[in-house]
Length: 236
Image (cartoon, rainbow, N blue to C red):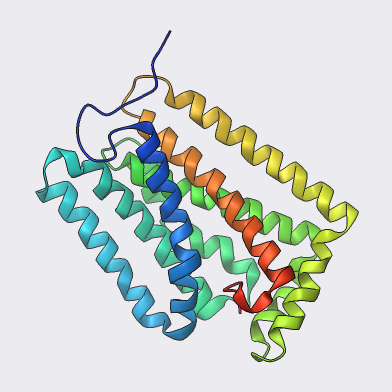
């Protein structure tokens, strides 16, 4: 019987730890990036270079045990920059969300065959999660109300966001959301199964699985918050 993938040494050296930090890097924007971009999008964008520079330094100048940490930070920097660009200047145009987030797609695919594979898999799985989110916004009709919500004043936006969230609690919308959730869990399960193989890409599959699953939970948190307490959603 094959054993789960493990790194021989270093930080993030066990599957559980690697998955935990990958999930944390998905949740981080909920509490830090969203309000930061609203208040000062330029400085939020510049923080990308802190993440990127730290990641590169750890991989190139740090010991071998820092390799996975550095690679993950580089992947996080790609998702961070895409999010800053969209939420800082283009959030009134939801059709541009996925294209903006996918700006580093070619580099990520190339990175899968290098020592940057952990970071590349994080970025790609977050992008896949964003694609599911955008499709659900389209199929449930939320995308039609989105520009009005994000362009509204601080007094009007909470009520508009609440009304938009109500669209997701209709029978047809709930069914589509459940189908999407099942698809995400199934894909994440396949990723975890691939990670069982004792290969250099095992860690990348674990990261992808954790990031994709966490994206689902974050989206669910956004929906519930938008419905119950819109001011705390971080979307307005």
